[in-house]
Each structure stands twice: as structure tokens, then as C-alpha cells.
Amino acid sequence: MLVIGTAGHIDHGKSAIVKQLTGSDPDRLPEEKLRGMTIDLGFAFRGSDSEHPVAFVDVPGHERFVRNMIAGVGGIDMVMLVIAADDGWMPQSQEHFQIVRLLGIEHGLIVINKIDLAEKEWLDLLEEEIREKVAGSFLDDTPVFRVSAQTGEGLDKLGDFLDRAAGEVAVRRDIGKARLYIDRSFVLTGIGGVVTGTMRGGSISVGQTVAVWPSGETGKVRSLRANNREVTTADPGFRTALTLSGIDKEHLRRGGVIVDRLDFDHWRNHPILALSVELLPEAKVPLADRRRLLFITGTTEVEGDIRVLGSRQINAGESGIVFFRPDEPVYSLLGDHFIFRLPTPMVTLGGGRVLDHIDRLPFRREAEHFEYLKQRLSGELDALILTELGKTVMINSGALLEHASHARSAIASAVTGLLKTGTVGEFNSNLYCVRHLEQLADIFEAKANEFLKKHPHLKGLTRDQVSEFSSTRGGQADDLISWLIHTGRLVRLGDRFNLVGRGMSLKGSIKTAHDQIIAAMKENPFTPPRLQVLAKEGKDHRQAIKFIIDSGEGYKCGSEFLFLTEAWEQIIAYIKEVLKTTGKLKVGDLKERFGISRKFAIPILEETDRLKLTERDGDVRIKGAKFGD
Image (cartoon, rainbow, N blue to C red; front, top):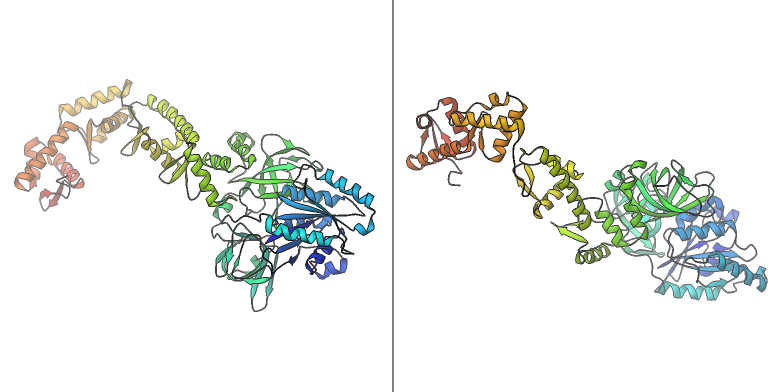
């Protein structure tokens, strides 16, 4: 189905043309009938039984209802810009033209109506003026039709063109991310809540579980009506009515969104929108920090304030990047188009695309952290992928850009190309930007080296230190550690991480403390001083003790003693020899062999029990579960 939206100044005959082309009146409200003007969105269909039907979204032309106009054209495939021959190009002609341009509409046509009220010479001049107005835009080479909705002149040619276009114009893409911005909602007795809108991004079927934004409630689709008929599946581009069950009717309001995903955490946790914005040449005011604006996407409207990236303000006719803090979170995908208007007076300022979802409003001093947004201005998928990967360490391939207006197949295809060129790497089903991760690793290594040179006695870094030196957190730090180990830059030593090739060493007062401790341990290898006594000597002794343990010079037995490694190995060898020979070991055996008291023998055996080398059996020890390891 081709969805065509009307655009143009009030009373230029948009609804009358649609009625002539479809046989139905898109003005459905009594007030619209009474006042002879479109207030809300109207809908009509042409060729419902044909292979390529056409749906019309008729929008209001009055300046007070521009928001309704924006809601209508947000989901269309083609725009029909209508200009009356007796009035010519008017203020709402200009505003509507700029809006459809900013919303990224790629196909359109121009209709000059009421030709029965003007001479041919005037019509020629008017068409020339219109051509000048739309020069350089998507309407630059579009056909211009001269019609009269009153007499019917020219409507046959217009209808034939639209019927052909229905089979030729590429309709809205199926990206596997279905959503429907609610433009009407009502309750039917015995049926329940009904919402209407244009399907975007994917399909929804009867019986499917869907969710409604912003409430987060879920329910099932009871019935579907698309293209004026009952269907089991509504595809992208279809004007659709859904009957829903399980969702409070109060939450089915205009501006809400029906989606095929059930988790809204991303949008709630990232409420700030990074936006590219183009300010119209006729914009009444510049965009500056803290300015209040009305943001419109689909049928969603929300006020909020902005912060400009880089420059202090964006002037009329200029473009830039802003951060928008809405009063309430907005459901949008990266790449979505939007319109900015002043809340009062109600005038259109400009529009653009959603570049990113941010967790908080950045400070001006943080501008350098958002330079990646400039790379997204091109709209190219490769740039979007690389900048998304550049924001973190790595991303699971299945989750990459799940909040963007791109199909998963298109993302996968682009990733394949980037993998082939070596621009993107893959590790444990995760994707990463090679250049970004190499830079991150270099920064980490430099900081780690600097720290470890100052503390040469340390075995390595804690996980928290790796996180700090690499400016990563949570799972990102774990991913980086795994990758650094995999690439041979880092080695795991128990609960520490050391740079590959780095050894431990001592100097100064810590070395003095180390030598004193080692001397005391060598003097009485099987009855060393208690750890508590050694630690009380001060910080240098505590650091030396840690070095002795980490370097393998000593073995920590429980919480009480530190044995020289050679002494501990002799104790273990003796225990194994006795158990192999007799099958059991008594406390007295250790006392006799090493000349020690129970004060030392008991902690030694408790440690071997913990290691499962031995196992207590009454008053003796027998072989433990790991004796043969």
C-alpha cells in the first residue's frame, strides 16, 4: 500500500481532491463538516481491491493545526502538495513544504487546484514560482498537475499517475521493528479499545503480544483492519486499526506507540536525545541553551529544553547538534525524523534526525566526548556502527543497534564488510572497533606501567584498578581484561592482572623490611614469626609480606603463619610420604619430624585439610580428596 499525505494552505482544496479521487470524504468530524475545514487527520482509500492500493492521509492546513499535520505526514511514502490557483504560495504552503522536507519524505507531486478560477498565463507564472520555491529539494523534478476539484478537470490524469506510483514507489521499509504511532483511539462497545495509525518498521499479527508506550502495559492484538478490510497481519505502510485486549483504555491515547517489543528500559534509562537539527531560514528565534521547544515525532509531542553542542547558539538557516531533555521520555529510534516548534507562539523552527539516546544531559565541558555525533550526520550505516562500538569496549553482535531504524539484516551485512577490512573485530561473539580498542589498550598500558613502576613490589593490578586506568566500568572492564589476556598484553595471577613481561622488584624501605622478614624466617624455617607480629611493624613490612606471598617466596598458612616456600614444600612432602606409607598421620608425627609444637602443627594440618590434601578422621589425618592431584 502506498500512503500519500496531503500538504498545503487552508482552503486550497486538499480534502476536496481526496474526495474526488477516492469517493469518500476524509473530513469525519462534525466540527469539520460545519466549519468546512480539516481539523484532525482524515483518511480515505483508493483502489482497495487492486494489487497496489493507495491510502490518503488528509491533514489540516490551518496554522493552528500544524501539529496534526506533522502527525499525519510522519508515516507517509509520498506527499501531495496542493496550491490553490487563486491564492498561490501561502504561509502554510511554505511551512508544510519545509516540514515534509525535514521529515525526510523522498517522493512527492505538486497539484495546482482551482484552475477554473485562473487564466492559463497566471497558471504558468504560478507553476514557475512553485518550481523556484522547491528547487533543490525532493520536489525539484516532480510532476505538476493542474486540476479543479470543483469541475473534475485534470483529476483523471492525477489519478492515473497515483495508480502507477502505487506500484513503483518503494513504500516504508520492513526493518523487523514494528511500531504504530497512535493518531486516533476510541472504545467500541463489546469490542474494547481500538487504535489507528500507520504501521512502520515491521508487521503485527492477530494474537501477537504487543506493548504500549509510555505505560509499558502489554496486551494481545484481538483483531486488525488494514486497507479498509479485516486482515490477520498488518504490514509496513498500511493504515491500520488494532483492537487490543489487556491494556487499560486510558493508556491508549494519541501520541502513544504500539510496539512489538516488550522492554522499554533503554528509553527510560536514556531519556536525553542527541539531535541533528536544521533551522529554517525563516525561523523566528535561534536555538540556544535552555530554550524551551516542542518536539514532535510521529504523533508524539513533548516539550523540553535544549543544550547546544559546541557553539553557543544555532541561528536561522544554520545546522548543528543539540541535546534535548524532554519533560517525559520519548520512544524513538536512531535515525528517526522530528520537528521542532516553539510552544508559544506556535511556529515551526526546524527539524532533523535522532542521533543518539543519552543517559543524562551533558555539561558543556564534556563536549569533546560527543564528537562522534558529528560522524553520524552523514546518515551512513558504517559510520553509525563504528561510532556505536566506539562508545564502549565491545557489544554483543545480536544487540548492536537494536534501537536504530535499520534492519538487523542490513546491520549484519555492514558488519561483515567491516570485519573483512579489519575495521571491526570479533571476540567471544562480541564486536569491537579495532582502532578504538587499540587506543583504549594503549592508554591503559601507559597508566598501568606508570603505576607499577611506582609500586614494583606489587604482583599486579586489581580488577578495579584495570577499570580505573582504562576508564571502563562493569562488564566493559571484564570484556577489556579478557581481550587483553587473549591478545597477550595481560596475564592473570590469581586475583591480580599483570602486564606481560613485567617482573616484580623491591627497593628502598620495603626492600629493607623484606630482608628482615626473610632473615627471621630462615632463622627458624618451621617456626616462623606470626603474621600479626610482622604486620605490626608498619606499612613497609605489610607491603613486604604481600610481595613475599605474591612472588612465591613464601606460603601463607591460614591466617597465622608465613612459611618460606622451601620449608612449606618440605612439610608437604613429608605429609605425603607418611600417608603413602602408613595411610594415616598424627599430630605428633609433625611435632617429632620438624621439632614444632601444637601451636604450629595444628594450623599446618588445618591448611592441608582446606587444600583437601588431608582429611581428619578422629585424632588422625588420612588422604584427602585431592591427595593424588
